[in-house]
Length: 137
Ligand code: T46
Image 1 (tube, rainbow, N blue to C red):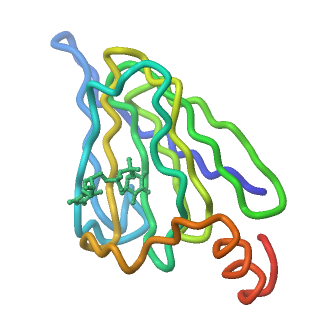
Image 2 (image 1 turned 90 degrees about the horizontal axis):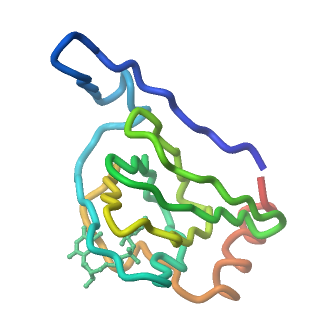
Image 3 (image 1 turned 90 degrees about the vertical axis):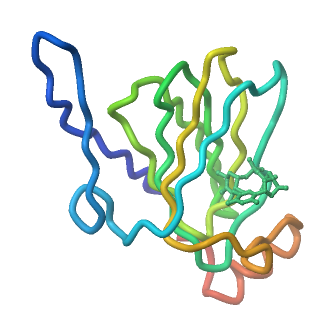
């Protein structure tokens, strides 16, 4: 499994850091939605699903968390702990977000509007989806 992590260029000066992200330049898709999660309780695991077509970039803009990626054959854990790093998560990747620090803010840039029908929330259904598409990447 190939983990695609972007390192964004901070524009730093004596005032601090600024990161600017433009669609189809810094982000490999058109950004149609932005959401973020914070105040995540200790021990909470979010996600536990894949998508039919949604692509996303996850950026932990404050604090830290871990992302488990599972392509149906292999699992990898990716720590997110720097606001200038973004993790690309393809649609056909089962994802779980966990181990949030109390101050964590996880920002997500998404290629599509919210659509519950795009979610695959059952793991066996996910494996079937991967199988029908010709196996894990
Ligand atoms: C994903 C991971 C990384 C909305 O109304 N609009 C939205 O755009 C989103 C993302 C969620 N919601 C509502 C639906 C639920 O009632 O917010 C509630 C929590 O959503 P969910 O349980 O899907 O959150 P996570 O953290 O499990 O998953 C989210 C995204 O939904 C998902 O696409 O890949 O973050």
